[in-house]
Image 1 (tube, rainbow, N blue to C red):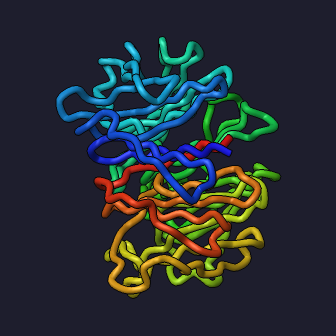
Image 2 (cartoon, helix red, strand yellow):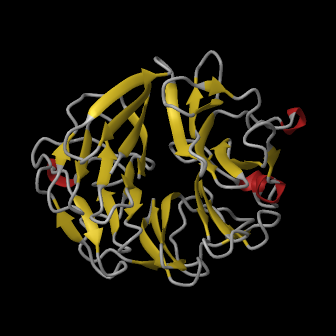
Image 3 (tube, rainbow, N blue to C red):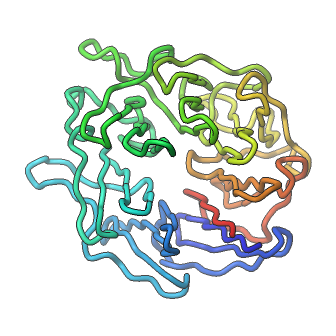
Length: 350
């Protein structure tokens, strides 16, 4: 077993490595002083990281050994005539034949030559509702992408504070899919947008079964996002940011926060919540987590699950802590480090 955990922070990328998920070595920071906002690994083994700098702007880098990194000469970019500014890369999803990147101002790009050139997915980026898109507190960002494992032309993209869009044709056309969700930013012209989705996760055995942590609650769809229903039985709050999913069991994990106003664990008690019945109910998992004076936030990209037989779940906080479980949530431990503000986690287990 070899586990590598990417910890993307405000001041660089750290890599925690372990052969048993008990003893860890921590390397970094890579890109010291730069914000690292996303990461991934291509099927061939190439690692990818996205950075941003107030001097140099956003960029994508690759590495084969996690020692040296090479910046791609070209990255996602808006056409000059668009008048838009690319502020941050929210995710990079490197697949076998195509890589996707989601950015702010909200847009989706793809490359079919491992980053040598990037093309905008104009079916989404120039959607007829685009003029009415409004940002959330984290900006106008395309932050989540789900891909149907049985039919890769079918995808879902989450945009804050716009909503979920679905394509059936590989990204040429997109349709808003937000029925049943409480609207966050009412638009008089387009009633099918204005929904502040925070994160998405899909059941590994059924791509139509999608979980949605939204500004206005925790939701589930059982029909590929055609309709949504609240699933908050057992949760202390419907507000939060991240979701993580065990790809072997389908168990889903969340980190509820008190409210939009306060954005901290209820009663200062850090608790992960897990559903083992596809969202019908949620149970608290707190063993090993701080149960008093815990006022951190966990951002939308800062909770992940590995693919090992007994699932490991990891989350990072805005105050620089990383907690993890080797036992699907039965007990939690903390990495022996204090990091800068954590933007994202990504885990690779072999």
